[in-house]
Length: 351
Image (cartoon, rainbow, N blue to C red; front, side, top):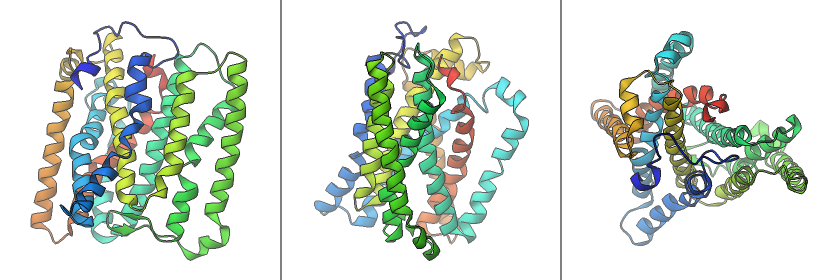
């Protein structure tokens, strides 16, 4: 990680049209999608070799992803929010509401666990897709051409719809298990044939996007990195729900998402520091080093605190293991989602 992320202090060599440059964007943002099947392969090997049963394998994946990359990525959010003096000064109410989320999580986790998991998964899927939309906006910001609004609408539509045709179908068969809970699919929704409707909408966006993209490249307006990112996202989103172990498969999506985010925030903070926008000496020390290792280890340590807190909650409360895990983790994770809606609405931060 240190070798590939050790960007120069002034981020020299940035190339137009790319968030940083091809040798950075391609392995860290776009083709890092190769990480998606990794959790599934680990779980499959653990079960095939007899090392673990299905439940133990899922727990291994959940804990490993959360500890090694999920936790560090969500804690890195504080570098541009709670640790930023300008953000604190300008967004008092926004910050105050964020601290209501852990209270809501605890109430739902103790008394309405199924509702909490359903709410979490819905927001999580939209959050992952929102980050990908944000990345397409970053590529627009870095490009020399201006796209029409309808073109952006087609890009957004394709990114947002790929996950749901097969995903909703699996939900309708009650095969969608997340956090030990089968995600509910009310019977009254069956009359609307939502999986078919989602499939029709997805393929309409897909055909429109293909036609639009061909026309853009013929006219010399096409963006190579944006096109690659949307293509990879579409394949991953559409194919991911085809597998049987959906809990582990979506941890694969989370792994890719978290990996992208860690490097993206590192780059954004380097740019903010370069523009003199970081007031925290602590954050300055983290992002000015030649290596990303101290930055990563700092948030890895914070994740370790959450792991210890989860163990404590499990030991002193009657909550089940899954409940203990999600009550603690989601208290922080949903705040991360909440603050990222601010980040993802400001693609100019990447300039």
